Image (cartoon, rainbow, N blue to C red; front, top):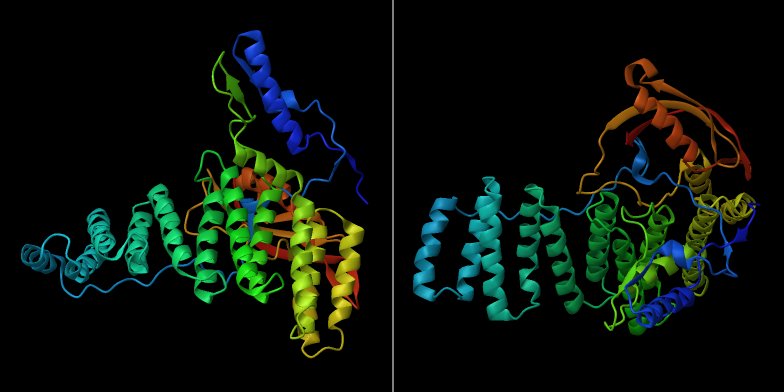
Amino acid sequence: MPSRVQSKHPPLRHWIGAAYLSAYLSVLLGSSYTFSQSSVQCCNSLTPELPPATAYGATISRNNDPRNNYRPHVPMPIDAPLPADVLWQKLSIEELRLGPYSAGLVPDLQGLGAALFQSGDYRNAIEVYGKAIHVLRVNEGLNTVLQTGLVEQMIEAQIALGNFVAADRKQAYLYRILRSALPASSSEMLAATEQYADWNRTAYIAHLDRDRYPRIVDLMDLYDDGAGKVAEEQGPLSRMKLPYLKGKLKAQYLLSIYPGESEEGLQVSMQQNKEVDLPDLKRLRFKRFQDGNYRYGKQTIIEMRDILVNDPQTNPQELADVQLALADWYQWHHFYAEALQTYREAWDMMVGETGGANWLQTAFGEPLELPQQIVFYPGRISIQAKSTAQVTVQFEVNRLGEAKDIEVVYPSAEEHQPAVTRAYKYLRDMRFRPRFVNGKAVTTQALERNYTIHY
C-alpha cells in the first residue's frame, strides 16, 4: 500500500481566505501586493495527499491497440449541385429578385459553399457558409437547428485551413445551438455532447490553449450538465446518465496527468484603493478537481455501479464492466492491493455466465495499456510535438502491471538515440492491466509491441 502524507495544497477556503488577506494587506500597507500559489501553501491541510497517478498520457500510444476503431466525428460533405461559377451567377440573380436576406437564398448559398469547398477554396467557402447562416438567423431565429449542417461545413473548412482556433469557437457555437434545442436524455443530444467533448479532449491533448486547465473544467461541466439534466428529466438513477458519467471519467483520467501551465502560480495583484480582485473562479474549481481527482473518479464509477445495481434489466457483464473500470482506476493510481482484489471480483462475476469465457479472454487474456477508455488518442487536431517516432519494444509485464526488462528492438540507439531513450522512459511510466489466469494475476514475458511516441 503506498504511503500517504499530508497534502501540501490548502483546501478551497484557505485559497479564498488568502485572497482576502492579500487584498486587506494591500489596502493596509498602501501599496501593491501580489501573492503566488507558493506563497499560500503555508497552511496545512487535513486532507491526505494521494500518490501521483501515471504520467504518460499522449506521449506514447500502441499502434495495434484493440481500441484503434476510434474515429473522430467527421460530418458528411454536402454535394455541390452545380459548378461554383454557375452558382455564383444564379445566386446573384436570385439575390436581386428576392433581396439579400431572403430565406430562399439559403439552398443556393449552401450549394455554392459546397462547390467552393470541393475545389479547395476554403476561405470563400467559409464566407459563403457564414452568409447562409446569417440569413437563416435573420429568418428563423438565433438558435435554429436548421443552421447546424452549415456550421459543421464551416468547421470542416476551418480545419482544412488549419485554423483550429476558429474551428474551436464554431464547435462551441454548434453545441450551444443543439443544447438549446434537444432534451439531454435524447440520443441526438448525447451524440452532440460526445462529439463536442471529444473535440475539447483533443484540443487539450494538442495544447490548443495557452492555459489548458479551463478545458478540463469545461469538460467536467459539460458532462455534469448532461447528467444533471437527465436526472431532472428521468430521475437520479436513470440509465441515460451512464454515458455522461463515462465521459466524466475520461475527463478525470485527463486531469490525473495534468502537467501544469507554462506560467505557474495563482496571482492576485492589488493597487491601493482599487476594487478587490478574487482568484479566478475557474482556476479555483480546477484546483479542487485536481486535489480530489482520485476520490472524484472513484465516486463517478460508484455512481455508475449504483445505477446498474438499481436497474432490474442490468446483466452480469454490465456489472463486471463497471467493476473492471473501478479496478483500472485503482491500478492507475498505484493502489495495487485494491486493484488486484477488484480485478478478481470482476473475474468471479463472469465465470459461468453466458459469454463469460469470451469476456474473460478480452478483459484479461493479455496485458492491456491503461486507461482502456479513449482518453489520450489524438483526434482532428494534431499533437504539437517536435518529433514523432515508431518504436518496437520487447518487455514483460509483471503481476502489478509494471513494464520490466524493457528492450527497444527498433530503432537501434545508433540510428535514433532520442527515440530509444524516450521509449524506455515512457514505457517505464505506463500502467497495464495485468494478464489473469484462473482468476490470478500473472507475469507476462516477452511481449513485443509497436508504439508511436511523441516528444
